[in-house]
Amino acid sequence: MAMSATAKDIFTKEYNTVNENDTLSRCLEGFKKGMPPVLAVLDERGKYTGIITRRSILRTRLDPTKTKVKSLMKTAPEVNLSDSLSRVAKLMITSGILQLPVFEKGKLKGFITDEAVIHAAVLAGDWGNNPIETIMTRAPHAMEANRTVGAVLSTMREQGVSHVPIIDNGKLVGLISIQDILENLFWPQKRMGNKDVAGEQIDSLAVAARGIMVKPVITVTKQTTLKDAEQKMHKHDISCLCVVENEHLIGIATKLDFLEPISQLETPERRLSVQFGVKDIEISPEQQQYMMAEFDSFAHRFQEAFQLGSLFIYLKSHRGTNMRGTPMIHCRLQFRTTKGSFFASSEGWGVEPTFKVALDRLERRLLRSKELLAYNPRFARDYLREMGLSPEEA
Image (cartoon, rainbow, N blue to C red; front, side, top):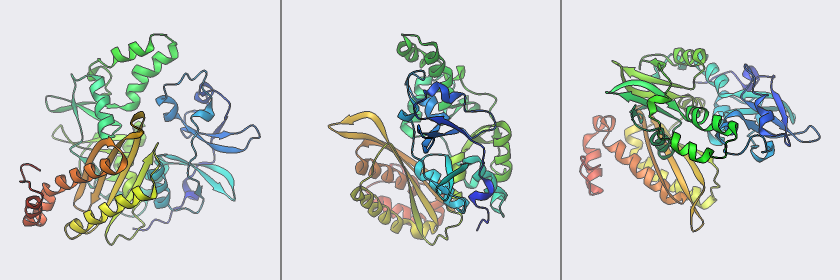
């Protein structure tokens, strides 16, 4: 489906600025209600040099009263006024930055946010009338309410997610985001300036999840339209919706889940495609060539069964964690098809082996899926046999 709206139609001209030599504390004054959660960073001559987001400040462990803006400043992809919503969504995914600067003839005109892109997309044509089950992540990682915040944080890191639903006796009772953990446990202590903050943070991670979870959870059913779901997210100022059926969690939908299909809406897909998102890591041409070769092999095996689909590859490095110079890599794969969405992840040393493990896990999940078995049960069973596995072992 083609969308006629462009960046010019939805960007905001109102934004705040900060000097690159200001402290992070000064930034907090700029994040005012109704303004984009991003500041344009200017140098001493008043020239634009980059951006700094509210999220990056909340997540840093640096002292906000002493740390200068330029130490956390990012270089964001530049959006042109004529860029389509699909292109903007793709830039957000590949860069991992959800608020992008808009330029005209080299001059900063304003910013465009993920919320603006999603809102415009659900109102354009028929796409917004699709049920949320078409984009939601099925069977999300949930944790019991009596588990510790430390366990929740560990799950977020291992799975590469920023929201974890909390359940009690099988029923959804709360939701924890990475921002909830930072603002409730880490951020207040840093503002106190206590010398024993590190020890207090470790102790606070032993708090039960029910102690900081957000409740009640804003939920929708699988038949809720994307348009209605987006309106609910905007009304409650949230970035995640839990999808329930008979009070039981069956899926989760974040802003990223909206952006992924939007980035593909204006691209006529004739085969399985791939899209990368990289954070805190540089991918060499050889590494990208390796991953593309593995993906081509993957696409060849599953093209007939799924026909259309997009594989989103998210790679990030755990800063300060390496073995003999090789960084620890987290890889998350999201495979969106006309038959549903499939997820897999892995952590390891180096890009290629970590990606390969995640792709192998994704293949196993596909081969045991009802969607593929319904299409061709023999295909899945024969392939599992070639791998030396039974369906029960996959």
